[in-house]
Length: 185
Ligand SMILES: [Mn+2]
Image (cartoon, rainbow, N blue to C red; front, side, top):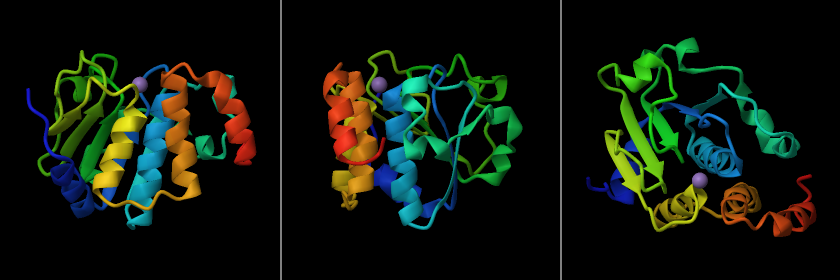
């Protein structure tokens, strides 16, 4: 199982116009942070990004402004995959808790699937894959992708990435003061 390069992944994203992403089941700070950071970067490039989550998120993550960008209570069965150019899976080791059409990889021709993760259980189920099991969070992998793609690290993108980096590293005790300082709570 081999990783694609960040260049290959970014190049594919640049060629996509409509992109669908879902938080993983029982979403945590890393899922929320990585999906909303990538959404933000792609929207700056003029992409249309739909971000969904079948499951609710814990109450302590509800207050972030960017949490409102997630369409909660929606899953892949609510969408026609033919309407999208790319489907992105972040921070999710397997597809087993997704609806059947996703588990069975019944993807329309022309839809590219991109899998970026840090779990060593990841099954490389994407057409393009980047799994870094030595990374402590998916947000750190996305950080490296952004560095390679020369994405501008503005305040907003840093807040989103920092959320996953802190929550996956058990640094939650530093999170609240940092985020309060950034005026996002
Ligand atoms: Mn994670």
